[in-house]
Length: 251
Image 1 (cartoon, one colour):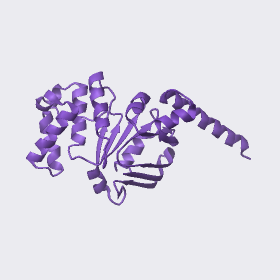
Image 2 (tube, rainbow, N blue to C red; image 1 turned 60 degrees about the horizontal axis):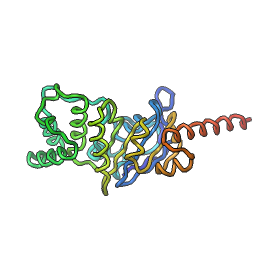
Image 3 (cartoon, helix red, strand yellow; image 1 turned 30 degrees about the vertical axis):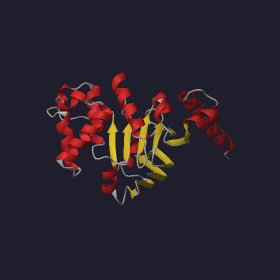
Image 4 (cartoon, helix red, strand yellow; image 1 turned 90 degrees about the vertical axis):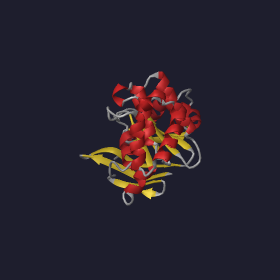
């Protein structure tokens, strides 16, 4: 579902991503973990064709992001923490509009909206104008909008940011329910407890580089830590120590 080879992205001579190589398959919830500035959002923007890589290749659902950007865009749904909605439209109107953009007829759209209502507990958001939404209500509709066309790859970039406990629970349950053959969910967060709950495997990023990739249980076992957050700090310290050793060995 996702194949990234030697991906680098540079802004004004400063590397945001450095030689990143990752693979993720169908049926997975794959986490991208790290602090703000680690490169998570840059990586996901490249995957979604919103940014061009400086070097390297990315394939999404079998399509190359440079050669087949339109096919990639049809294959993904994207949610981040800052997406807005037209204030004068109801949730149902927003979803019907986007369904039409993806070629769904009215009957198909309404059936899909009903399905998403059950999955995300949209409730009264469907017939309330977006200008009257709470943050949680708005984010549920944003997620429904992203998956209205049932894409094989869902990108969630800090999607739980700012949500109250009920909306966050609905989001995490939706992510867990989306784990099935033919689907891949990319879940980016700096909240390690979320990743521990929903992710099958994770890639830990720090300063644009991949520190490690693997199942959560394997990372905890390797580091001897009880939580992913503690494991993250242990791995970052290990990486820093290795770099210092390289500097000492350099002529």
